[in-house]
Length: 191
Image (tube, rainbow, N blue to C red; front, side):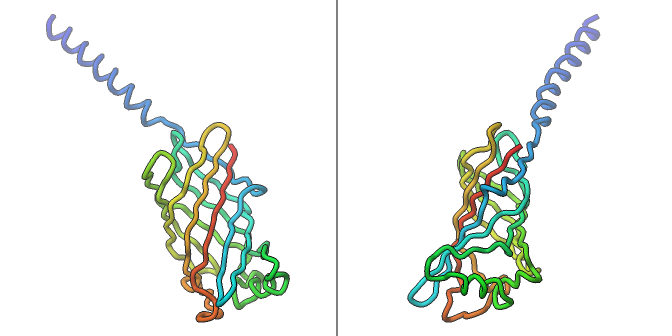
């Protein structure tokens, strides 16, 4: 009789503990679709004695979130929709950046960024590592993302970092035009 009670108690304990483990393992990953109307990538490029600013729209993509934490994702940047935003750059610079000297948008109208790892350093900040592909060249890019929201209302994150453009084959004007480009990513998502 004692063995039967012990067996039933052990079975109940195992079922009870496993039910907690199953609940933790079943946290659902929520996919947010990138809101192309609100998301964008801003840039600042410098040359001797001056600088230029501009933006790319984010065409599409999605991010995966589990329990309010970013886990992964991928998004497409519309290079063909490049816009120079400073008064000194104008249409001439826009045309030059779209040419084979830089992005060659006739052949390579899109770039992609795919998140490979996300390591949170605080409640709202995470080190994101992924692959950026521009003009058929893929390089690893790591940055700190500020996760502003990841809840039922939507997803919003920002990142500010520098990238060496020559690693992507964008070598025009090295020596006159800085290799480092300042980048700001503003990514919005909805369920």
